[in-house]
Each structure stands twice: as C-alpha cells, then as structure tokens.
Image (cartoon, rainbow, N blue to C red; front, side, top):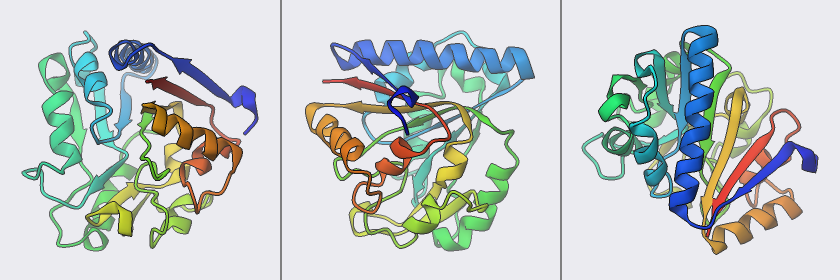
Amino acid sequence: MSADHIRRHTYADPESLARALAERVEATLREGVSARGQAVLAVSGGSTPVRFFEELSHRALDWARVTVTLVDERWVDEASERSNARLVKRHLLKGPAAAATFVPLYTGAETPEAGCAEARRRIAALPRPFDVVVLGMGEDGHTASFFPGGDRLAEALDPDNPALVVPMRAQGAGEPRITLTLPLLLDTRLLVLHIEGETKRAVLEAALAEPDPSRRPVSAVLQQPRTPVEIYWAP
C-alpha cells in the first residue's frame, strides 16, 4: 500500500483518541443509516477499545438500524471474562446503543471448527460492504485472530478466500479462536487500526518497514492496496 493509503491520527492521550474515534465512527454509521437505512460496525476485543466503546455507546444514533458484530472471538461462552461478546455488551451495547442488533461469532458448538458454518451463515447475512471495521493489534503483531504461526493464517489472509470466517489456533492465541478473513475485513467503507502505547507503535513501524505477514500479520492489512487504513494512536 502506498503512503497515501495510510492516514495517521495521533492524540495526546487515550481519552482524546477515544472521543475522536467515536466521533468518526458515529458520523460514518449515521451516513450509512441515512443513505441505506442501515449500518454495520465490526469491532475488536481486548482492553484497548473500552474507552472508545464507552464514548460511542451514548451517541444519539438511530441504533435500531445499526448491526454490531465482532472481528474475531475466543471460543468461550459469554459468561467468560475472556469473551469479546461479553466485553462489547458491557461497554458498548448499553444506553442508546442497547437498541443495536448484535451478531456474535460464538455459536455454542464444542469447537470453532464445529461452529464455523453457523458463524459464516450469520456473517453472510449482513449487508456489505460494512460501514466500519475497527481493528486492534497485539504486541506480537497480530490483528483480528491473525496470529503468527496460526494454523490457518494463510487461509485467513488469502485475498481470494470466499469463506468469510475461519477457525484459528495458535500458540500465542490462548483459546481456540474464530475470525473474519482479511478480504471480508477489507470490504468496508472505513477501516481503522486502533493502537495505544509506545511498544505497539514500534511494532506498527516494524510492520510497515518489513511487510512479512507470517512474522507480523498486521502487515497484511497495512500493505494491501484495496482499502485505505486510518491509524488512530495515542501514547
């Protein structure tokens, strides 16, 4: 991806970032609802997006016309503190945003492989392109559940893969996972990479300088020529 396809937004602190990102996402979702009668937002889990979720949750959108889903999920029940669905429901789908429709990836099947067909069916039913995809990044360079050494990493990053959703197992992943594929994540009107801290900024710079997705899978997002990437960073 050329430099003009990557736009950086830098903020003094995570609180300022959360407010600015919430404003941007709100405006994009509002535009989708106005133009098409509906909008789709795909979000990541982890601790980084919590402030952003809290900021977005009280925005006065027509949330009943918004569908929220996940970029990826640990294969755990929503009762688990490790569940991304639990995180989203606790911090985003409350107040005005409680009116949104939520589409989870976890199906209750014994394994992600067993539940993958149902997860694919759920995601295939959503209108595309998505309006907003918000990705995070780990210190190992993973994004979504694209982990270094993942058993289906090549499949998940294949630009021609029509599967939409794949299971993922990796040493650094903890639990087995399920993840949207790279081509699906790129099928969006707004693609955001939200990262915080100097350590992650160093990982980002390394991924930009050395485009090897097997080493730092986020490189596959940063280097692709299809969809512009908006990077939101704060120390």
